[in-house]
Image (tube, rainbow, N blue to C red; front, side, top):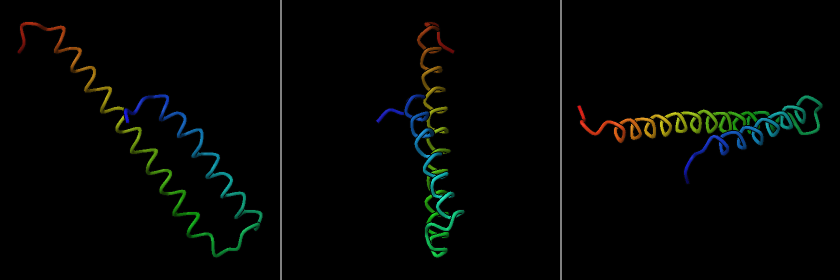
Length: 77
């Protein structure tokens, strides 16, 4: 799967509300306090995936830019 800016944005738009919902569930004590660690683990995982996707997006954009530069320079280095 190619990582595009739209993919990263959609993931962000989904993961942030999920984290806020989990926070609200804990804040208003709708779920037992024993769910604190599992919810924290899920939120941390979602956040780390978000960072990973952003890094991969930047890397792929850099590769595309380098490939474009190589294609425009027929003489080479």
